[in-house]
Amino acid sequence: MDSYHLFLLLLGLYIAALIAIGLRSSRGQRSVEDFWLAGREIGAANIGLSAAASWLTASALLLATGLFLYIGVGSVWVWVFPNVAGLLIIAGIAKRVRRIPAMTQPELLEIRYHPIVRAPVAVAIAITMVLFAVTDFIGFKLVLATFFGVPPLYAVLLMAVAVSIYVSLGGFRAVVWTDAVQFLFLAGVAVGVAFLATRASVAGGITLAAASASLGSDWWNLFILGGVTGALVLQLALLPGWVAEQDPWQKIWASRDDRAARRGLILGAVLLAVVYLACLVAAVALRGIYPLPAGEIEAEMLYLTFIQESLPGGLVALFAIGFAAASMSCADTFATSGASCISRDIVQRHIRPQASMKEMLVINRALVIVMIAIAAAVALHVESIVEAVIIATVIGTTSYFFPIIGGLFWKRATRWGALAAVIVGGGTQIALISYEKLVLKAPLEAAFPDIAASGFLAEHGVLIGLSLSALVFVGVSLATARPEAARLAPFFEDVGREVYGDGALAADRTDPEYGKIARKIEEKVSGERAHLHLRLDLTPILADGGRIEERLDWSEFLGRLEAEHQAWHELTGKDTIYRLTQPDMLASVKMVRGDRLSIWLSAEPKREMIERQKDEIYLSYQEIQKTLLELGLSATPVG
Picture 1 (cartoon, rainbow, N blue to C red):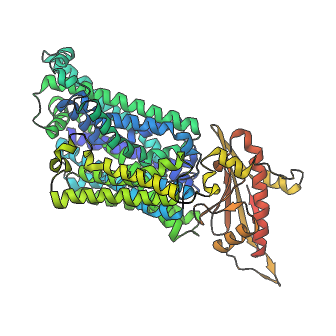
Picture 2: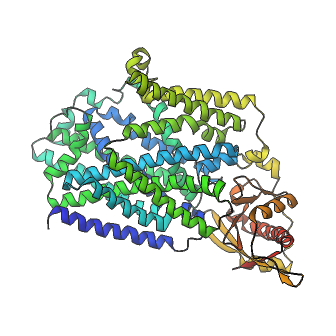
Picture 3: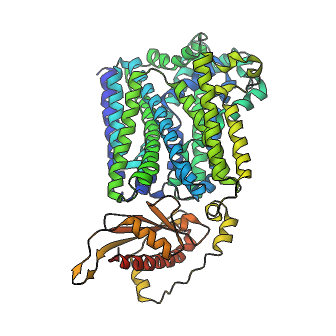
C-alpha cells in the first residue's frame, strides 16, 4: 500500500473516531448551554489540551519553525511568546470571567453595559472566527497537495464534512474531547520532526551542539528585532488580540469551576511551550541539514520538505494525519465560537427570543455547518489570507479589548465609554488600513520611516487604534453618568453585597410543597460548584367549563413576572431571566424556556450554598406559579 492510500485509510479511521466522539457527546444534550459550553462541566486536563490544540494550527508548526530558521530565537516575540503569554494572562483573569454566567463575550458586554454593544461585537467576532477557520482549511489543503497531490476541492470538502458532522452532533463537548486527541497527534508530529531532524543532522556529521554554535550570535540574540523596546512594542501590539480572543474565554465558561479553568489554561500554555521548544530544536537541526533559506516562506516550507524527502511513505502518511488533526482542532473551535455569537447574540437575543430549547438546538447545529461551509468556500478561492486575518484581528482588538477588560476591572466604565471605544478604536483602525491599501498602497512603515523606527506603526498601526480606543473609553466613561449598581453587582463583590446584602432568604422548609419541589431538583456536584436543575411542565387550567388554550406567551409571562416580583431581571434579553438576590450571579436562579409548554430553572451555587439555592428555587417556583395562574396555566415540577 502506497503512502497516499495508507493516509486515506488512517484518515478514515481517525474521522470515524471523531464522529464517534461527536455521537457520544450528543447524548444528554438538552439546552443551548449543553451545546455551547458542555454543561459547564469540563475539567482542567481537557481545558488545557483543548486550549493548546486550538491555538496550534497546521501552519503554526511551519511558521514557528520558519521564524526560528530565518530570524533566530528573537522571533519568539512575533509568535511563540504571545501564544504562551496570552493563555497565562487569560488564566490570571479566569476567576473574574467565570463568575459571569455568559456564553459569549458579547453577552458579557450586555450584562456589564447595555444591549446596544452586543450585536456589533457579535458580528465582528463571527467574521474573525470564520477567517481564522479559513487559514486551517488552507493549511490542510497545502499539506495534502504537498505530500500527495490532492486537489484543493477534495481536501477542503473532506475536512468540511468531517468537522461539520462531529461538531454539529456533539457541540462544544465534542470539540473539547476531539481537541485532546488532536493535540496528541500534533505534539507527536512536532516532537517526531525534532527527533528525526536531529538524527539526520548527526548522521550528516553535524551534531546539534555544532549546528547551534554555527548559527552565530545574531541568531541567538533574543532582542534582535529592535532590542528590548522592539520586543515590548510587539507585545503591546499583539498580546491584546490574543487575550481578547473569544474561544479561550468560552473554555473558562465551560470549565467545572474557577480552579479547573485556571489550571487548564496554565496547562495549555505549558503544552504550547513544549511544542514550540520542539520547533526550536527542529530549526537548529534543519540548519545543519539545509543551507540558509532565501526568505521566510522558503524557511517555513523546509518543514514539509524535510518530511517529504527524508521519511518513508508510512511515516509521511502518519505525519499528514498529525497536520490534519491540527487543522481540524482549530477549525472546529473557531466555527463553534463564531456560530455561538450568531446563535446566542443575534438569533436567540433578537430574532427568536421565544424559541424553545429544541428549536435552538436545531438552529445551533445548522449555524455550525453554515460557518464551516463559509470558511471552506473562502478557502477554495484564496491561497493565503494571513493578511486578512491580521486585519480582522487588529480591528477587533482596537474595537473591544478595552470595553471587555475594562468592564471586568473598572467600576467607572460606562456603556457610552464602551460604545465610543468600539467606534473610535475600530474606526481608526479601519481608516489606517484603508489608507495603507487604497492610498499608500504600501505599509505605513514605508511612508513614515522615522515613526516606524519606534515600532509604533507595527501591525497596521494597531497601537494608534488601541491608544485612541483607551483614551475615549476612559474619557467618555468619566464624562458620563456612573453605571447602574445592578450592572456592576455581578462583576464586583463589594457592589454585590451593597445591592443584595447577605442574600438571606425566608423559605418555609416545613411546607409540604417545599419537600415536593426539593425532591424534583436534579443535583450534580462538579468541582467547587453544583448544578441544580428543575423542570416545570405547564398545563392549562379549566375556565368556565372549558380549557385554556395550550400556549404560553413568553413575553407576556415575563412582563407580568417582573412587574409583580422585583427580584427577576432581564439582563441579556427575554431568552434568559435571572432572579437576582445575591452577589454571586452564577449561583442565581436562571429561567429559560424549555419546550413549548415547559420552563427550566437552574443554578450553579458553590457546594456550601446548595441548600440555600434549593430554597431560592422553591421561592422562584412559587412566584412563577402565581404568575402562570393569572395566564390560565399551572406549573408541575418534573423529576
